[in-house]
Length: 96
Image (cartoon, rainbow, N blue to C red; front, side, top):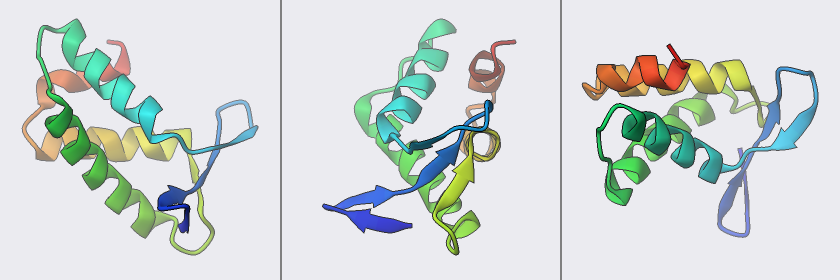
């Protein structure tokens, strides 16, 4: 992944095949909303820690081409939530 103005630059292949720039804010909002839906409150520090771990795993997975997919982001997010004992948030994140 390339850094652009202090930010990591990665492209995401969406489910419809289109490309867009990775936006960490979308990931943060998604995790926070999923937790909130089941009455779990994450503070901003919790969200940042989880997202940093997710970004580290994604950077390893796409180090050669700065490209990932929405499916890969979901898979890594689920793994990080599980590894950090937030299994209850997984079903909410998946919309189950």
